[in-house]
Image (cartoon, rainbow, N blue to C red; front, side, top):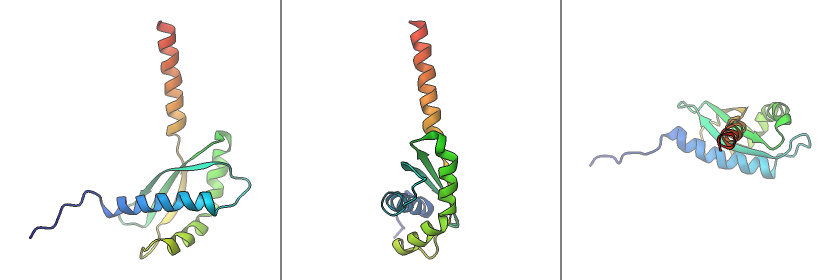
Length: 120
């Protein structure tokens, strides 16, 4: 009997589980007064499951660089907590990155609104 076709790779499934777990950890357990409102937008796990890029958006854009730096400094904390929450042989190394897609989207929306407004 043939094996069923998998729709998602293992790294995609791990990404999904890590995304939910990290969002919950940041919201409920990560207490740093320097960090404001953070949203985990994407978790991208490498196919070998050794590296994970976590893309975050920050409510206060001017604090984005500092916030990402703080999150990267706390990556050991997050790996430790993830190792207790997830059933993985080893937790990937975490690298936090600022997700600029929201800022770029807002800028594009503003440019389109201006272009439509000027042509009317």
